[in-house]
Length: 278
Ligand SMILES: Nc1ncnc2c1ncn2[C@@H]1O[C@H](COP(=O)(O)OP(=O)(O)O)[C@@H](O)[C@H]1O
Ligand SMILES: [Mg+2]
Image (cartoon, rainbow, N blue to C red; front, side):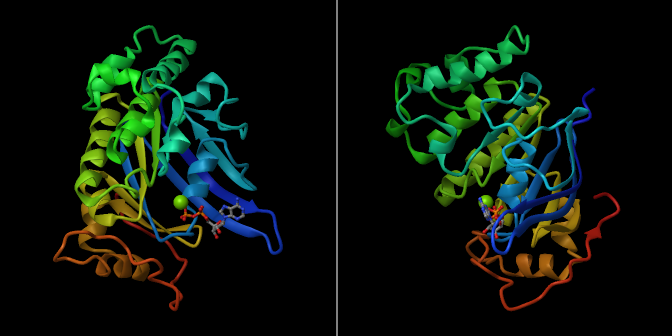
């Protein structure tokens, strides 16, 4: 069954005094080959949602299935083979890559994950390096020998070598300079789509997300407040929070990065707006 990612009524609460309900009732689907951009200001629950999808944190309510199989919270490396079909690229490349292992070895680990699932032709480290715009000879080098953009390319290669059905990028371009951001985003888009994988691309940079996403999902305080086709949400945002996010994008320099906390002094409605196509 390749129905992709399905999330219903997801809640994640961190223990503490008081407890933090970081995800407060999210429904979300990502179909195979679909690119969904998840946006919202810092602290709204994007990373928590991503970690729940990978089985790295346990939901307090709701369901997550991938191709019909329930996601069980087990930790990244202990995940059973079927859930290794969800792969993640993090903001910090050293969360995705081991600093003291040659990059070819690490891409090889991704290939082994695919082999363990019975994928016979999962490619070679050299082939994957070339696919992300690097050289076969780079396989012998270590992560610190590359630029930030190159490291994210390598992390993408490692993730895709595992032949995932879903790739999640949790702010994978946020630490890169502006000229590199859209290149890395476009690369993740192109390779995920070419592999038939879904891509859940998390960012606070609407101007880049808009370029690669089929659909936009806007999160605010642990909830989805608006979702729809990218051009629809971009051209006629219905929720006041989305309108504020879009208005905060400076037009002149094309940067489009959100201010740190655009909504601090304003309370927005938690009623979602779902465009007809969303
Ligand atoms: N391990 C944790 N323990 C307790 N609270 C956390 C933890 N991780 C995140 N939070 C809180 O959960 C909320 C959502 O955080 P996060 O998912 O990281 O948001 P985002 O990725 O959108 O910035 C924030 O209030 C954050 O402080
Ligand atoms: Mg985050």
